Image 1 (cartoon, rainbow, N blue to C red):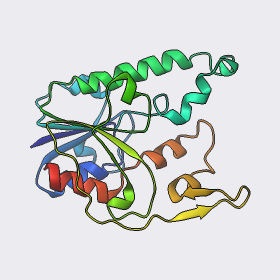
Image 2: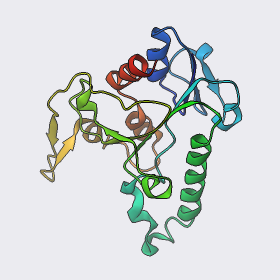
Image 3: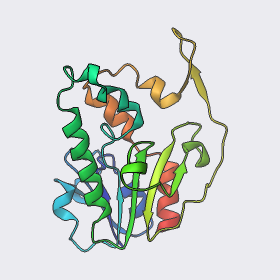
Image 4: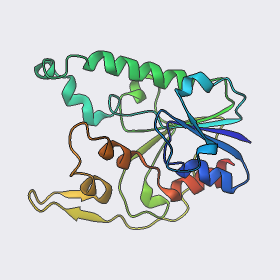
Length: 205
């Protein structure tokens, strides 16, 4: 199959499909960390009509996740005056991916507003269902694809915060040192888990 992996710079999912013999390409505005021959550095909306059999998309969640709802409140309007428009633009981008002329589509995002703005998610998966001892609820909206079946269920591991004593998943704790607009934090938290990528390539490929 010809597979488009939208909004992916790491090529973790792209490589998983390549290893199964598919013609997979990542597409992102960022440079890829993988093979540039398999990467389209551009706005993915310019490539939705390029004859793909499948698209797996990871649209930015900054303005869609429920974790960002507090910044929409009136008391933060001075600090974030464009937040409403940014959320509107994020919803529009998400929906353009949903309506792409591709037979098989999977769109990934954390728990957020698209379950009400669009429709209820088809499935919520966790990294610990695919061999990674992490807790990170991940929503999947599916078209022409079956739900992923867990491949290796393990026990989640937690890290206790030294200052507040709260429980954190490892990825959130380890990236807590990246603050504000530091793209490193966003990039690190956006990476797909290899176990999930392999399940996608094996079960959907």
